[in-house]
Amino acid sequence: MPQNNGNVDIFGLLSDGTTVDSEKKKSRKALLASTGVKEVFQEGKISINSYTCLGVQCKECIKVCPTTALYWGSGKIAIIEDLCVYCGACVLNCQVDDCIKLERTREDGRIEKFSKSKEVLLLQKKANTNKRVQRVRSVVLKPQDYYSQYPKDKQTKITT
Image (cartoon, rainbow, N blue to C red; front, side, top):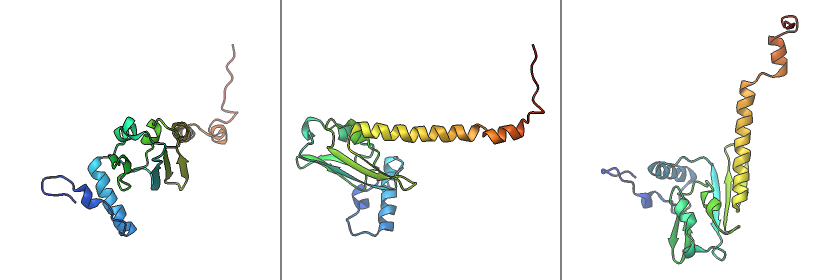
């Protein structure tokens, strides 16, 4: 909750596990607003395999997390679920495959699961390709529209 001096008490906004979904979404929205990070995915899950994690030797996932949802605690990497936006930056920078597992739901309901940097890159490439195709389709005329706009009798032949 915002205080008089403009600071946000993030620990007061974290869910205690007993809150209702609407309350949890409201506190999550306020929590993310204080970080300036946009929430793109509806929901998700993140887990870290503490047996394969290099932890103290690496900490790359902690460094790249845009919301500081990952932190070093009790001898291992820990997660604050309420802060995670499931962006995949941690998986992309992890040195160990299948160490961080992420599952997220897109706005259209598609579920994406990945735990390797290669999988993250392939998902991003696919999403970006779909966006480019949609943009091109919105600009380029369909053949039937083209022929109705430029019928053969109006077309002139260029003679040399």
